[in-house]
Image 1 (spheres, rainbow, N blue to C red):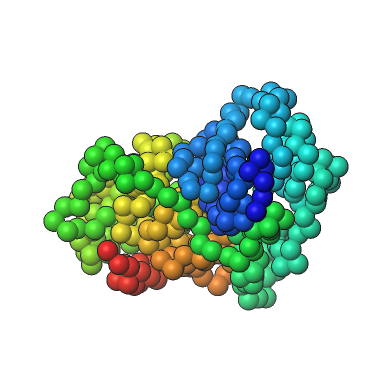
Image 2 (image 1 turned 120 degrees about the horizontal axis):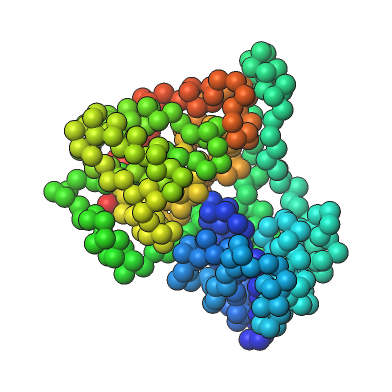
Length: 369
């Protein structure tokens, strides 16, 4: 049993989807270090994700306006005994060093290895996402090569578990999970009027993708799928997105209104991260691109239909959730990991509305509640 005075600082990753994928490692770390105090250092924008999570004793955040020297001084006052860096960046290792933490753990990289006291070599099965060169994309299409598929052991969840194993955590995978309190659920139901009407289910639609257009299924197909699913299930729709997605969600909401005769509830730009987790949990089905909210929806237990284009579900998909299904096509160039498609977006245009509707109906049919 670790000493009660052991104080572990875990440096969080910076993006929502990646953060959700670290939750299995944090759960395993809590199991392994029950006597330790575990503090997470997170970007301020992700604070709502971590509130009330059972694997943490404390959350510290930093803002974009706080420089690394200021942060280092603030952390040094806390006298942490162990630091674990989830990101592979120089900055995350430098933060642990400036904090004066005697044991600093992370993956070795050029420019940061000297800042660590314990280096964790990457797993043999680890794969990094590298953008496919345009010439390679064109060659694969010309020769009609098979789409690239990766082993399940390459999923990024395993990377974070591997890092936590340096502190005795079990490396066995588990589904990412985020707790949402009933108090938060009730507050969100009241704020947005989400009481179930006459037994009608709530379906969520997340048509954006901050990474870029190569991860966005065409808007008109989302609308077509929404129309058919409403006809088949009598669902009500809510639409999600960040502040940058407002124009897109307004257009899609107007099109869904014309197609179904009923306006969806457009929540783009209207929810905090904590509220987003709650409304996703309320959903009886979430139809989404590969985005941070996709990971969050699966982690709170919502049934999810995840559409993949330029990225790989074997590496970053909701593969550990029993209530999630992935829809993709076998384009020779996929995955290319590019933000914008240099050709004709065939990886997404090859996914027909009927495929998505069938997957959604199957997922909704088998989902309890």
